[in-house]
Image (cartoon, rainbow, N blue to C red):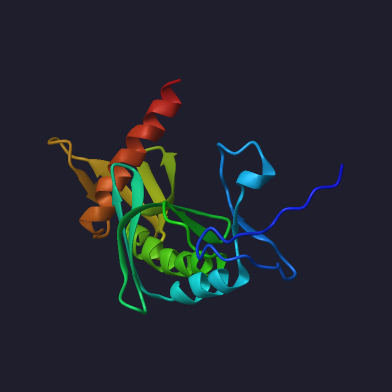
Length: 183
């Protein structure tokens, strides 16, 4: 049996005729095509035009990432849960794909600053009477063939001066390295 379906926009409540694409909002409780939430091309264009991102501020709390977005029109979305993956940032707010890509470029800048002082890699060379490490941070700092030892107070001493934020991470990496060698 062939049936017809009048398309009514769930945003403006107007009947419409789709162009090349038919836009709809997921409705997980819907079991019938008639219950689908269709959106007309006019409302989609309005929605896409609204999502022009002026600024985005990312934060990390309890291993979760959040973003506060301010749009060009002044609208602000505070503390949205977000996840960066595959060139986009998915948020708890429905946003167009172009805005998700823009958020990803802003996220990458924030993430690089956040991890700039974090060790990207660290290797140890344990020789007779001499232990050294090679390490690099995400920010591009590199320390090669640095001799070190732990003094009587258990503090790390290096042959060349190393920033504290690096030495703290070297201690953690060394403990992990030692634990692997025990097993």
